[in-house]
Image (tube, rainbow, N blue to C red; front, side, top):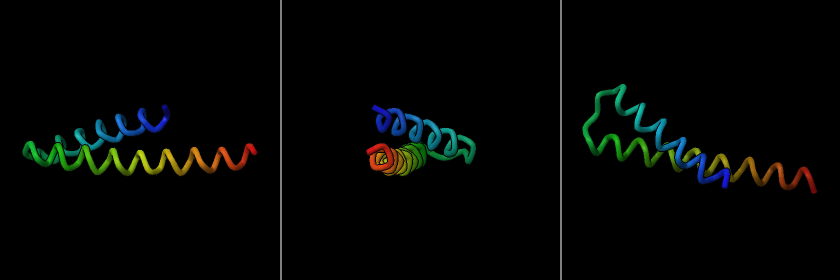
Length: 55
């Protein structure tokens, strides 16, 4: 569930980043996709670290 929220947050951050750079439509898609993937991977890594630390 946390990963889904991270994907959505990453997509929103990417879209805001593309908007700030005044990009075209494909720039919005590109930045949203890349940021969503980065946030999703970080979320999975953090979740695995917490799961291993708890036991």
